[in-house]
Image (cartoon, rainbow, N blue to C red; front, side, top):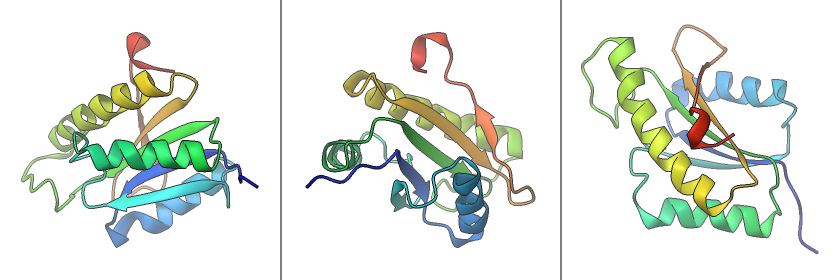
Length: 135
């Protein structure tokens, strides 16, 4: 029997934001209801076919009909950015939006959530995709 969950979450592997990420997902009502993909830089290598394949596998195997969460964070070592918070968010937002468009094209029924965590706040900054870029 195929199992069903509500979301797939793509996040950075950085231990520093796991607790706020898990708290946030629980607040979203997703406790025990998401597949987690944890990679250095999360969507940094969004063009790699394997990341899109992982999302497809999660959607297919677990009949995900809800959301895809793309979760990035401040001071990500994989990005190697020596920049202020605004510039870090801008650079990482580009990658999240690009990957979100790929996912949305393949799975238009899914809602894409872009989240950026700072190291000081538990609640992420929500990044808007824009009207033409998904839900």
